Image (tube, rainbow, N blue to C red):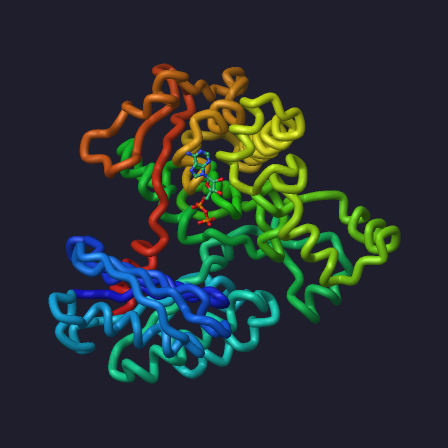
Length: 403
Ligand code: ADP
C-alpha cells in the first residue's frame, strides 16, 4: 500500500511516497518558494532518479500537481492517482481538539480553521494543502497528524500558565508542545532498541534541530515538554531565545520602542545561537568559531548545552527517575561535541557518556537502523541513545492505521 505524506510550510511543500508494508521511501521531494513572484524550485528523488525543475507556482495546489506529476512521470513510482491508498498531512497545531491523528472530513477542517490563530504561520498552509489534496484526490482518504497531539496527555499543573483564568477560557492560552511525532517516534524506537516495553520506561527525548524541544515521557505518554503555547518557549535554539524572563519583552518594547511584530522577530529570528555569538544560527559554524578562539561563540555553545542540562535535571524530577535519554535531529544526531557538553558531568545521576562511543558512533544495535547507536558507558544506569528521527514514518503509520 502506498501512502503519500505531505508537509506544507508557508511557502514550501515536502513530500514522501512510502510503501506502508515495507516502510520503504519510494520517492521524496521538496518544492520551495511557492506563492512568490519568481519561480518555485522543485527537487525530487523518484525511485532513485533525481530531478529538478523551476516554474512559477501560485499556491499549494500548484505544488501538489507538480509533485504528482513527478511521481507519475515515465519510470515513476505510481501509474495513476488510484495507486495512492491515502494521504497523511503534517499539521502543526491541533489545539485542544486533537490528541491523536484523525481522518479528515469537513468537521475536522472547520476545527483546523478555528485553531489557525494559534499557529498563524503554519496551519493556514497545511489547511490549503489539505483542501488542494482533497480536490485533486477526492476518492482518497486523507489524515491529519499533529505536532501538538502527543503532548495532550501533559497534566494540568504542567500545561497551564499562572495567568488569570479567563485568558485560558477565552484564548486557550496553555502549553501545547510541538515535535510530538518526533518525540513519539524516537521514544518508541529507543524502547525497541533496548528491548523493554515503552510502557515500562521513563524517557527524556531531546529533539535538537533548528527548532529544539525536550519531552519527558513516562510509560509511553508525554508528561511535560519544553515548548509551550508557541515553539518559542524552552531551550535556546538556532535563532530563538527559548525561555527568558517575560519582563524583558516589555522592557525592550519600551526602551527600544519596538512593536509587537518587531519584538516577535527579535525573539524568534535574531536571538539564540545567532544572537549570542553574532556568528550564525548553525551550530557547526558556532562550534567552528569557538575552535578559532571566538569567546562569544564559546558562550553561545555553553549556554545551549547548559539549557539542555537544566531541562534534563528538571525532567528527572518530573519523571521520578530515568531509564533512557534519547537525542535526535540535526544537532542531536550529528554533534558529538554538543552531546558531550550537554550530557557531561551527570555521572552522579547515573548518566555516564562514553567519549569513544560518543565520538565514534560505533556502538550499534543488532537490527538497528542507520545512525542509531548507544553513547552511554557500560554500567551507566541511564542508557543514552542517538536515534535519527522519522516524523514522516509516524505520519504514514498513523495514516495506515486510520484507513
Ligand atoms: P530542522 O529543525 O530545520 O529540521 P535539523 O534537524 O535538520 O533542523 O537540524 C539542523 C541543525 O542541525 C543545523 O542548523 C545545524 O546547527 C545542526 N547540525 C547539523 N549537522 C551538524 C553537525 N555535524 N554538527 C553540529 N551541528 C549540526
